[in-house]
Each structure stands twice: as structure tokens, then as C-alpha cells.
Amino acid sequence: MEMKSIPEGTTVLVTGATGFTGSVLVKKLVQANLNVRAIARHSSNTEPFKGLNIEWYRGNVFDAELIKEAMQGVEYVFHIAAAYREAKLEDRDYFRVHVESTQHLAREAIKQNNFKRFLHTSTVGVHGHIENPPANEDSPFNPGDIYQKTKLEGELWIREFAEKNGLPLTVIRPAAIYGPGDRRLLKLFKMAASGWFPLIGGKNTLYHLIHVEDLTNFFIFCATHPEAENDVFICGNRSHVELKQMVTTIAEVYHKKVKFVKLPAAPLFMLGDICEFICKRLGVEPPIYRRRIAFFTKDRSFDTRKMHEKLKFNPIYDNLEGIKQTAQWYLDHNWIKVTS
Image 1 (tube, rainbow, N blue to C red):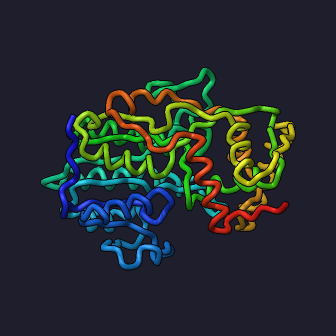
Image 2: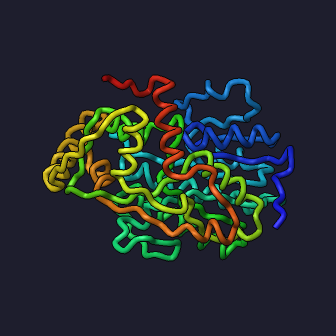
């Protein structure tokens, strides 16, 4: 199937543009000579985008008036914005970013005369822990925290809205996003570089990855693919990676031999709850919290054949190649310092 690109000069809107995934996507859209608009909070740093042809709309992504202004004449929406765990966030904040913003954007999208496609970002986290891996797009939902619950709520709302109102929609559920510049999995790389790594509950969990370059390519790919319209896709590599294999691969880049230490899960979850409770009231980020501990205990393994076979999309990076490249980038940019 011959794929068409988004025509040069087309007006597109990106939310979450200053985040890890959003920043990579925005730069690709600018390079494609599109008329790029981006929503960013007043506190967001736009210095890395200096000199790029981006029209910024500053404010909250759930601000209805801001969205109305930003959406005028838009033909494609890339809705990337997400609320990640921070001590200052309340449950209401997750709802606003994941649900209210989606509602405002979708309602404005159907008012635009030439609107082409709404690319909505969900998460594989809506499936929760995978009891019988691998899971696919039709597997049961089992969100485990407020982030995943509100992500699911936003996805289900826009899918129903799109069906009722004729909104051209593609929902993408990314696996764990990583790559150069990522800070969320940086701690895992740092632990691997230290020479020891905890196995909570003694579990060698399954983890499914997608490189940020591949994910952003997939967003752009789906924007014009006719078979992607009105469908849902898990975006991930062809297979999962075992946690011990991932950590060992990272350690090899740093010329380290890693020692795996088994730790009981229950006391750590209790410690995480206590730490998060105290830190939240102090307004500081907790060094340990339930969701971070759960990362090491829940299996994430998915059947991604729908993405590969229906759309014929193939990621550039496989698991080990991408992990090595990212580990080396952290070292080269002094994000990780290895001691002998």
C-alpha cells in the first residue's frame, strides 16, 4: 500500500509537546514543513525548541478556551499530554489532563471543516498486570492506579464520542517508552550501572518496550494510514524483554557485572505507601512509592501483530539494540557516571 504523507503546510496540534515523546514528535513534524501548533504549560521549558517554527499556546491542556483557540483550522491532533506521578498531584489533576482535555479537543475537532485524524495516546497500562501473556488490544482492562484508570476513562470516552460523531480517530497504546533523553527509566539504567539490582519478590518480570523514535514514527504513520482510522493499536516491539536480560545488557555497556538481590515485595509496598503519604504532605517527591515498586513486580507482555501485520509498520530498534544505544547515550551525555 502506497502511503501518503501529511501535506506540507498542514496545520497540526500537539499536546504534551515539551515532554519526552512530544518533543521528539514536534521536531519531526517541523522538519516535515507542517504548520505546527503546540500546547505547553506556562512553567514548561520551551528553550530546547528555540529557532523552530512552532506556534505556542501557553496554558493548561484542559483549558477549554485555550483549546478552542488552538484548534481553529487544525487538521490533525496528536494528543500526547499526560500527568505523571508527582507529589503535588491530586486525583482530580489526572482526570483533567487525561479526560477533560480529551473531551475539549474532540469537541473542537468535529467543528473543523477539514479535520482529518485525531491521534489519541492511551497506554498499555490500561490492561494492568498481564496474568497470561501476551495480551492484545482486545484483552480485559485492569488498570492498577489513578494514572491508568484515568487514561482508560479518556480512551473509552473518545472512542464512544468518535463513533457517535464521526470523528476520525486512531488510539495508540504505547508500551514502555524509552530512548536518549528519557528520565523515567533512567533510574533503572543507573541501578544497572551500580553493579547490583533488586528483584522484588524474586520476580524476573516481563517488560515490553518501544523506542521513542519508533513510537513517534508510528504516530506520523498512523495519521494518514487508511487502515488505522477508527481502530486501536498497541505500539511495542515484536516481543517483550525479561527484566534480568534488560539489566544485564545495560550493565555490559558499562562493563559491569550485575548482582541481582532478591527482596520481599510486601514490606517494600508498605514502605512505599508510607513514604508517599509523608512526602505528599511535605510537597516533595518520594524516593520510593507503590507504582515504582509495582514496575518490578508486574508483567507487561503484548502481542503486537496487529501493528505489524495490519499496518505493515516495523520498528527500527529491537530490544537489545535500543537498550544498548540508550545506555551509551546516557554515558556520553554524563547522565550516568560509571565508577570502577
